[in-house]
Structure formats: structure tokens, C-alpha cells
Image (cartoon, rainbow, N blue to C red; front, side):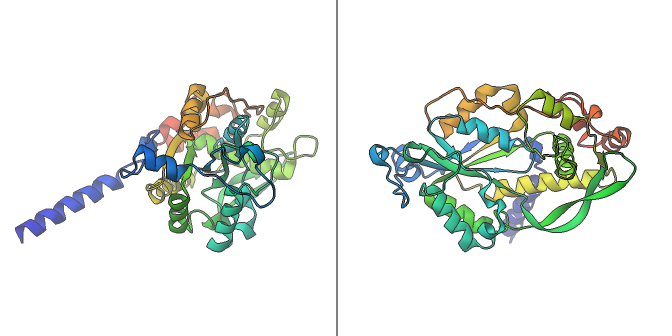
Length: 338
């Protein structure tokens, strides 16, 4: 009986410790199954696809690795994917599950995954015959039901305010995480997690991008990503107003989503990256190439960052936001981080 009480107390302590782990404490990590040795790793993680739509010709004996970029909107995944696609041997096919029918149920999801990893998915990024790594990006917070106010957007003349809604209710990778994790392990898919450390900056980017979907500030065209400083400056002129009442709970919700995703896919071979770290130290891209078993190359992107400098320059109700976050666990978000 004494032994039973002791074991119970140890379990409770471990649970308590686990619950205190914060999203910001997660470091870059490469996880391998403890049962993997080098020989088995090569067998299970390297593939030789036989596509139905074309012949790999002289490249049929070239090995291919499968990967998936798991991220959230406005976390740098678009920029990161252009960097990967600048590698001559990488085909990253974009946000393929943005189409609802492809993620309506686990059957449609696995059919889509099979098509991508068999090299039968065609996009502007496809290297086809001689791809050494093939994958796509998948948003963790893909949703279907509009539920709650995230902030407000102002009309260009700033005389009226419209509520800006975000969607809530997962449909995709988080809803079917067990089946997808099993698929990744069975097929030897490498998971690349990409997050932002400063979630307030991400929120500003989300609100500004949502506003531009309607305002179309660039000559009547909406662009989520730009390739010139002039376009970036035009989009950066808009300052969103953040709902300070819901601000902390919204930041916590994003943290919880990221933490859950890491727990769900803990058994897969994965790496965790942060957008800010890649910005400050581009050499970290070599870690990604090594993770995918690629020959190291200098990776490049034409994308230009939109919101630069202090966040106070990009938020309309900065005083409210500053007052809300001061003295909280999110106070560091108020400072310029790069």
C-alpha cells in the first residue's frame, strides 16, 4: 500500500511539471526513435517512388525523402518554403490542404498524401524526376466554423469599423492527428515545425493580411507576400486595432495549439524551428538541409518582410496593447526582437 501511494505521488508530480512547460521553452530539436540505428534509418526514411504520371528516367534510383512543414498562418511558412524550393533537389508543393475536400476526412487526406509522396502532385515547385525531397506545408489551425472576434479592421477612410472574425473548430491535421502521426511514422515522413516566438507580431500580420483581402491596397490586388520594398511599405501603412480584452486569451490559444501539435507528433522524426531564429541566423538553414539529408546549398528567397521595426509603429491602439501585456508572461512581445 505504501508503494502504491509513493508511485501515485510521483505520477502527480510529473503531471504537474509537464503542465508548466511553456511553448517558449521548446528548443530546436531533432527527434529520432530510440530503436533506430543508422542502417534501419536509411531503409525507413529513404524512398524510391514510382509515379504513375511520368517516368523518373535516369533518376529512378535516386532516393527521395518525404517531409511536411507544420506551421500556422503568418508564421513565415511561405517565406521558408520559397527558401526550400530554391534548392535544386527540393519540391515543396505549398498549402495543398487549403482545399476543403482534400481534408474532409482521413481517407481524402491519405489519398492526397499518397499522391504527393508518389511524385504525382504537380505544382510550380515540382522538380519531378530528380527530386531528393518532396513535401508541402500544412497549417495546424485550419478551421471551418466562424466563432469569435479576433480584432477589428478599419475601412480605408477609418470612419467605420468592421468586426474581423477568425475561424474556430479544427478540420485537418489536428482533428486527425493520431492517424496522420501513424501515417508519418509508417511512411517515414520528416516533420518540420515552424513557429514564431513573438506571437503578437504574428497577430499583427494576421490582422493586416485579413484587412488587405478586402481593401486590396496594391492596385486592387491582394498579396499575402511581396517582392519589393515599395509594396511592403504600402501594406505596412495600415495599422490594425487589436482587441485588448481578448488579447491574452488569444495568445494563449496559439500557444496551446503549438504545444498540442508537438505532443501529438512527438513520436515522429521532427525538427522544431522558429522564424526569428532563421531571420537572425540564416546558417540554421543548413540544419534543415542536413535534417532532410540534402547536399548543402545557399538558399534564397525574393520575398520582402512587410512589418519591420518596433511593433508600436504597426498597431493603432498601441497604448491599450502595451497596458494589457505589461507585467504578464507576454511582456517581451512588446519589444523589438529583430
